Image (tube, rainbow, N blue to C red; front, side, top):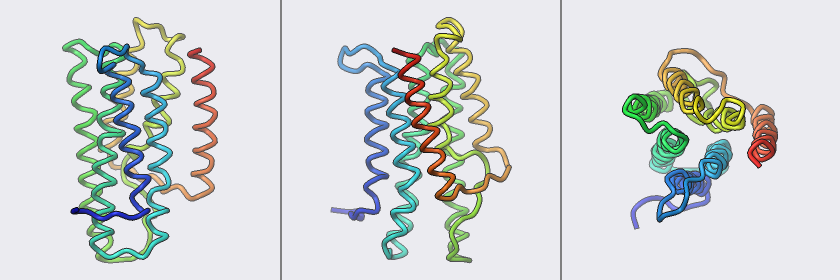
Length: 211
């Protein structure tokens, strides 16, 4: 079989599997009722997996080909998890008019532009240094796994009539942030653990608010 198969890619693949489940829940495939809440939870799981896949990959000595493969599959999976899934969730919560279509297209488009640009720049960077990346340019796509669940938890307060508008507005702003030039410090382990704590609180809050 083509490809590289070892423990360094497991979390990346699990992230993709979770997002596909999220798309399934959001769309309500097979006559099942659309369940955006489950899709949001899948988005959070994908974010958790993505947070640690790079660190796990660096625990193994890899060939240059394995490193490049890891970069490519990470970005390809991120596109589905944090580019496509949020737009599908948007459709499931009511962004299903012609006026919503440009935003539903713009979001994954900006995500793929950012991810492709990152791949090119990361390849150039690794030719010059073996040091780990210290900062990102633009908003990382993984950030939606914390932003959108928090937004969804206020769906009742915002109201079913207005929530698709608010959700679309957030998608638009986040999409622009993906491709805007500003520096974001790469989180260390302590910060990442803080993100996990925030995510856990968000999940509890989300389940409480939507019960």
